[in-house]
Length: 323
Image 1 (cartoon, rainbow, N blue to C red):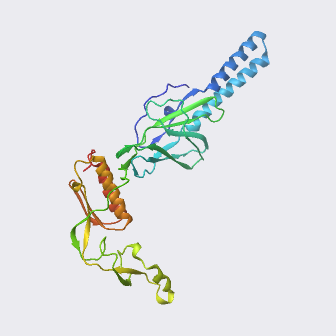
Image 2: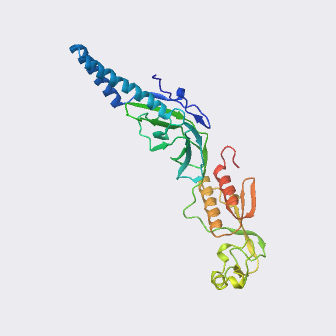
Image 3: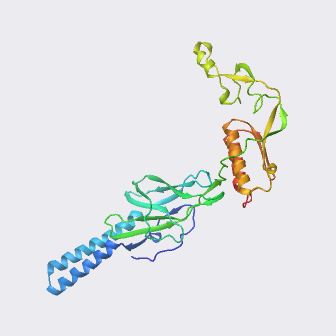
């Protein structure tokens, strides 16, 4: 019934914890319990106590039953990888792990956590979860993200000592997950570089001080230009339409974030951090911006998709599969 521990988990995207993948050994209380059984057996033999033999064998059978139940508490669980959202360097990357119990028995006190190679096997895992029969449970595991690029998920270890704690069962799983780590934004980045071809649309960094009046809302108008006072005065009888503030100021320079325009003497990571901060600033101020990094060039745009594409390019620059 005892199996040797496996040092390296088998790589896989999803896994079912079959009996062959669950390993069990006595815990410290279990070892003390075994010593107690041995002393009871010696006493029963020495004094030829029938009740002593009965008590010893009954206690031993309880230990065997606990070992079987401990293994069964984990065996049969199905593990799948969940979501992993991008983060900035220096933050905690979050990986979602889902445990599915397709059986008819509840699973109790299953602990899990990341267990990189070299971590002591006796280390207490941070998360404990119960998985009811026919249900699932999701656990979010965190790991530091020190640098930009792809961060693969470390191996996951699952353990349980349910029900009596005399035995500990465990299993290892390598989830097929990775998270994209963006460069950390520069704290004191220079102002946004407004340069390039002129545009006569009246939107941008220039011309916003010249208020020209109120007009009906048009798709694409920044939310910060909404005239809330005038909107509040327009009741349902007036149509309740949205209106925006209109500015004129002539030509407005295009906002171009060009990595090649940064000083080459600056550290590469500092330049990437500055570009990251500029992308966030432009999005926060609702300023359409073009983006250029190496052979990548994105036309002026706004929104989550444009922001994600730019930050992804910055994260993978100089890395495998990057710009």
